[in-house]
Image (cartoon, rainbow, N blue to C red):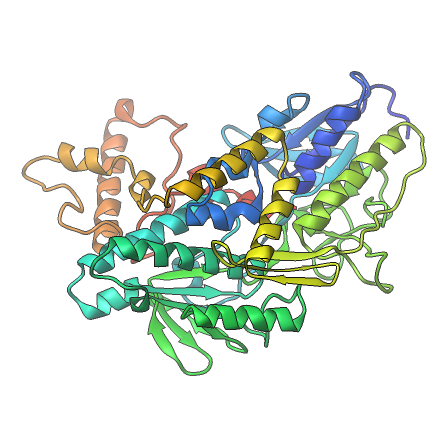
Length: 509
């Protein structure tokens, strides 16, 4: 298609596909050949395979994210959400993080907002659960686990202690298994700092609705993983569903009931809901219908890839599509960028065809499983393969060097066992000391993270809001981020408000 001037390429989403596509286009486009705009709520791309190690303290969280403005210097970055897309009019409606929405014109669309957590209507899930798809959630879970150890070590009530030390993970895919294994490994190591706690005092439960875990690997490797987890005292419940989580009381369909102080939901993903607000064709699962060339099926100047796209898998039978994985997303981004360049230069384009190389998973420090081109590895070799593979895939030399530095330091120094959950409410201490003497500061006698403390903090915030309405001159800046709601019975999560409130804090392609 002729554009008359340098075409404007709009990339929706700055995850795997969005960032890698923009990076490759930026490197290969001539100066005046096209302009690129990336719309993404977060200022960074998260390399999700390293989230479990970040949660466990093996990696610095800042080293598992890639700052978009630093690596995409040749692109315009808009911090915000794409709300709707009218490809017929070549217009996207954008809601920036601050200010009013606006329309953004483009010539070529690369739509790759990725996926979000697929949840079920389980009572109490929204109030008690947390996902594991962002750096913020990884940081929160690290703080949560350590703060529960702190609370249990000081508790005199056996029921309170038991609840604090019960950790429930729902979903037996890679995200759930790696998060569970790494956090349990960290908590086991941390128990050496608590004279009143032992690893046997903790209860770690994995609930999976199907009859196996890690469906990406062979049944034999999945069974090996179950045995390894059970050997560590982790309870694996297959063919089991959670029926309720009200007030942190877990009710399973096999009749078992128990209290859980931490609930982590990793039971799958679904396409980003923004796709339903476009005029692009979707399949019955809500994914964009795509061709093997990574073009939106039947639509000119529209490209897609990753978790949000139904890309034909040419290595399998008719009707098969590629699975939602980082491996496919990164490779598809490369092919998408090459095809888009070829289209601009009136050159032939090529289909995406990639045989799935296999899978690797970490089960904690020096433990793992891997299946690469049919070769099965277990234990330390698999763990080393996991690290080597993902180190080769994490973008930029800067990030690779920082990750290696973290791993090297971990060889000589033990993990730091400290919770920084109080960072989520940095005004709490100031609010306490600034309260009038006649009215004790909210939450002064309540333990952080307890319902009483949360209710007291809410009351203090309500009082702040009343004061601000009465005295507008003293109101806070409109740029102050909103507080992130905290599930009852848990400490306030250390989740940046912008990320916690964004649709893209979920897994993106």
